[in-house]
Length: 222
Image 1 (spheres, rainbow, N blue to C red):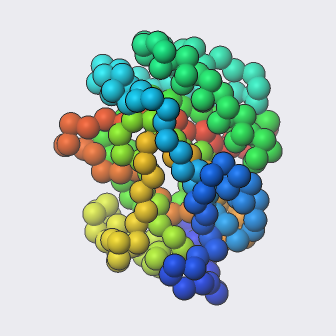
Image 2 (image 1 turned 120 degrees about the vertical axis):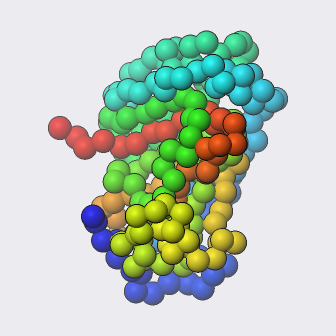
């Protein structure tokens, strides 16, 4: 298991330099060496969540693909979603993927889109990708933690039980931040001067709730 470095110095809580939340221009701040996560807070136009929730209830397969930037077809990913939400989603996803590939200089990336019915990644963790974009279109969003609230030793040596591990990694539950539907998160993972962003999927298992999620991740170039 990879050991994540404990930041030698860092700001106090409330004055973190490792994260930013703001309008779309905030995404560019991910290029700063000290920033490991940016969140573009936005509202979904209209109210597509109800049609997406209905689609998620009957959708079982998530669409996965590794594609070249600017060369992919999204129609299969949104198959079965009713109009006008389907067309809006295709446009929105295409714009986000273009922003992502440009921002992180990725000529190829992996993306997935679909319904999530369980806790997915339930332990707080750092991605083994250099960069990842996550947007939740319906349901609760990704949970993440500012660097200063992470117990790095516990992250490096987590307990086997996810609940125990999470309690050790983040002792202060109030420090956990939660994205909402529509928010765009872009996170650093491995291979940066700053430790990668610590995050997890929101716990929904057993609640009868579903999520509709877009994920894009950089891949190792051949």
